[in-house]
Length: 387
Ligand SMILES: *Cc1c(COP(=O)(O)O)cnc(C)c1O
Image (cartoon, rainbow, N blue to C red; front, top):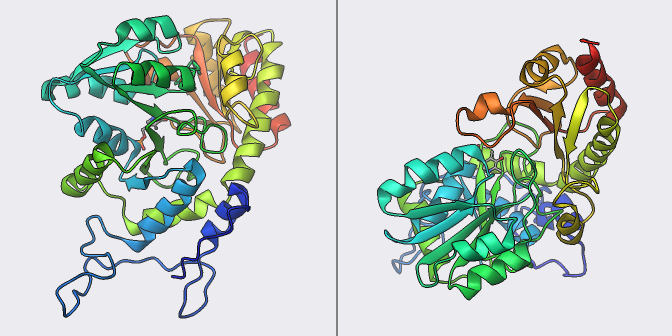
């Protein structure tokens, strides 16, 4: 592969569209081959001059995709791909030491919250959950010298709670802790956590980064190639939490259209949020782009070009009416996950189970690239069928 550094004047959109513009040197192909080798030739002088030793974790296709993500996140340390979003997130916690104190949000991706509460604690991490959008509460949760990591998710599932990343970074750093941000929902196009002071940014690349609901993948990007980042690299390599080359290739292809997809999805989400706010069967719309959303002012500062592709609605008739409306959709697909080109609807409390902060009348909407008028008409019919 030819790896000339592209002119820095080109925008991220241009660089992503061409997957950094790398050309395969033998055939001059504009698309990189998928590298499948699990092992590489050692040089006669006993070195590995290529930098590739063994397929766990050395793979050129994976590194291509990591290069695009590092560019998008402006990550000096680069990016690391993992076998899933959960593998990426848990690698950050696995790089801590037993006894370390961690602060995480009350409203966050449910599976990671459960893992922190039930598994991470078994390995000696001390975990406190706090409403991270409440900055005085976040500050009060810090134990200087003991708190080693603050984990944020913004906007966070499924209420789209917005946390001020720059302010949280100041609070974390003042107490001697690092800040990691799950930026899955915002995407690198909309929010730049590292530029706002975060040390690590995490993505469920399964979602909007890939965008086609056909890859499970996770990613981290690091602000600095420091000792903590090196430990995360070691955790990935030794625990084998790697992504396969086929998945890395699909993710690379998905990221080439990220800017176009997310612009269309955000425009659709904003239009739906506005129209659903006036719907007679809707008690409330949760979307950071609406002026009435509690996180709107912070979102307007730290999100660029839009307010994301996710919204939730509270259905007037309560839980049973919400489940019934989701049962009637035709164009929307009744499924979990988010960020893909097809729009998904989900009764979220059914997924999260007992103890969830998710209200029972809430439907979570992941807006795809379909015609927003069709999406609205399908929802209107499904919500109104009881009238
Ligand atoms: C899906 C998701 C994850 C987990 O990613 P997987 O690829 O499913 O392991 C983590 N955080 C957020 C915000 C997610 O939406």
